[in-house]
Image (cartoon, rainbow, N blue to C red; front, top):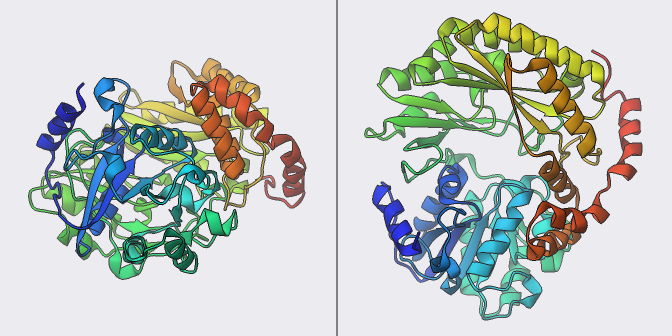
Length: 503
């Protein structure tokens, strides 16, 4: 589709779009398609906050999806004014996870901007990056970004713009920002990461500003119920050590911020169902005639009243996470969920007539053995029995990928052949009674290498993208940086320390 027509179609369906004017011009770039970017509360929240600053104009741009890409997309345009993205003073990228580096390369190329930082001169726009990736390991971004905003960006926006638009020399702006908390300047810091920033509590909660039927969340108003997590799952970058744990938003404040005209409300956070008043919040929203969505459910928080409220709010799929294939692994990973909680989730879904119970599971976790898979099979079959004929059990399988800034950092990837064999075993034992959907094992390996690497793996990713972006290209470039074999000793040491002690 012709780019201008596509943008017009998307804008016509939006409500809440901001059309600002200001000398401090920024384009926020989401390096994935529009439907994904507009479902990101963080992206929408920063868009609103930037446009609230004096003399500031923030617009949006998105990576075109393959089905709409044609020759008219040779120069990427912003949404609000259809201005070439490369003409803005600042390009601010939101990067969710490692493989979105590919989208960053593509959007810079479409914008006519050199991808490598060292090839850009004083006349080029500033390239700023932030987003969820900064909570774990943003160093693969270092060869491409001038500035990386670490962690929660709300309190850093004005200091950032003061330097970018207030300094005559780029070097002066970088030097000042390098001395401020929350800013990672690759050209100065190298690969020594500063701490992630924590937004002041008075700036919470984040809320969306634009509703659109073309978002993956379809006309849903998003609001933060809490930030952070009080749990300590050792594989998760949002565990309790990140920014001091879970910060709650009061029930009264949440309800007061929902616009009257909104028909669908999404409650967002790393541990939404851990909010002590979550059942009351959900019940009040659905009793007002609205549909509801939650970004995270914990099976140990489900009660009949909670599930009833979710069903009344339009829920057709209850989604929970087991993560570990057995009780032994869940205990080892400090996952507080037990088999009884997962069975109760199936029972409640069946009793309330929820059509699908989806359970997320990691395969190839450290210490995983065949016996753990047998325990998982038995659990899933018992869930299917307890759910009854009206509720289908679906399991989402993803290979374990060790992330930096977690206790399971530097543990090995189980290996593509091993993970694929285990997934095939589960399919043989469970289908068709339990539906299985697995993410790509090969691309999970590429994510693992990037997650464990530094700037050199970012450059390898760029070389692979230039080769054509096929998996074979990534395998060739990333294979030299796969540290799984040398991490095996670290795995043994963690076993000896009792990280995966028997339940």
